[in-house]
Image (tube, rainbow, N blue to C red; front, side):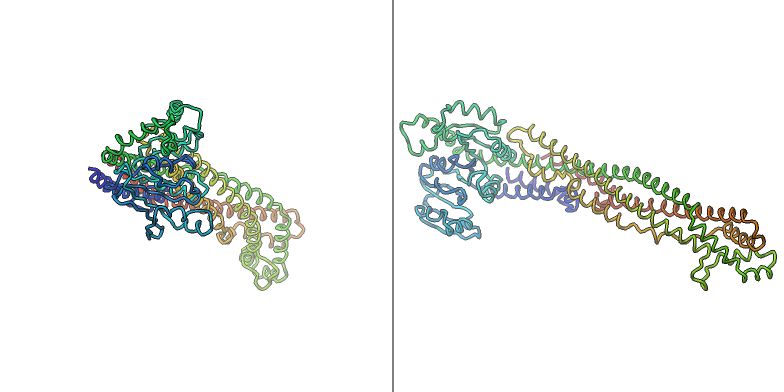
Length: 594
């Protein structure tokens, strides 16, 4: 039945939209999690027909090795090897006793058990040897529990991270755990957190409070204390002295407590090993499916957040676009107002008119007569290439256009960059808040489950909480990079086309030159006409800049919004995102039928 159920679950897992689409899994930051679930299912399938694996786990110096020796009835697991050099020990039944060193490269070495201590120690040679060892496998015909494979490991929080990692990996594969507590240090918060992690995997756990001979508290008091503070993580709790049991101290008042524990192992574990094995598998599968559902529900929340974030960013950009437009418009209008009274422009117009009223033009006026203003207009609209130091009105206008544009462009880039930073910061704040809420939500789910339903791995969930690895770390950083790149692409100079002066300005200039030559005594009227020409030039520059920057602002902010959506959605379009949501919801419904 378990094999059929494993195959059914495996077939269902293969229908996961996250497994079918690697890019989608990466988008929601759940690739490692779904791969881990698939590997765990493979491990469960491989262990269907193996001996019941009983894992002894606990803090350093809790007496795990002594307990194993007491259970087996002989000294097999050394009790005086430093945790820094300790390896995994597997102790099981066989008709013929043997001790085998299994190396990390797969090679094996059979040795005399009495020689084992010579391999481990603190010398450089022994430490180097310990690094090469994967585990020690001990088989003994004196094993009182033929259906059990006892696994001893380095204590949690050892001085080597490698040992702690090995212990964490074993927790995935065992059927039953004996969690050994030191009666002298009962109820440590960090230890209970580790217990919760194992419980989340659906592993049945039996608590063993060891070293009760070293404390003044009664076994009953210790048991009550642990039960009150364990959130029902344990199937049962025993208080024992493994040392007294191993050494058969007849005067020990604690032997009966060990006998009670040993009888429990015989009646409830060893004799019922097949059923315990099946129950363990069922519990692990149930936890695995629930965890799979939890991850995919999280994926939906992340996709929803991505879409909401895209809308929020678009709204932020619309607001900032209006702010940028107002800022640039005000600067252009103020600058062009100042240009109305700019002495340099006024002087340039004077010089242009004075030059055009030269004797050569006077001779032309005599020739063209009353058509002189029209003829002058044509002249004034042309560049004076034969006299490079003199400029036409068109040249003068272009000069002031680009001079002013340089100032406006600098301001544009400054404000534009500020907008990018502001929008990015707001997005990151929203994403961080989402990640935090996602973690709290998952943690709340975790606490609401009973012992056998602890299927949410808080550590893995914390990794995904960038809950948004499309919503948090990865996307936020890509998002910021995209916006920053956009800011660097702003080049306004090339976007400004040359201003074509309207006929009214050119005509006025021609009239001015003609008026100078016809009536030089009317200076006041002449100055008035020059000022009017200056107003018209400033207005033309203003209109050109306003139009150009209006188009550029629209174009740039639209580009930012589009790039932002591409980054948030990993180049998926919005319709695809919505379809993936639907597909994942359908998949979750399929999981509920298992």
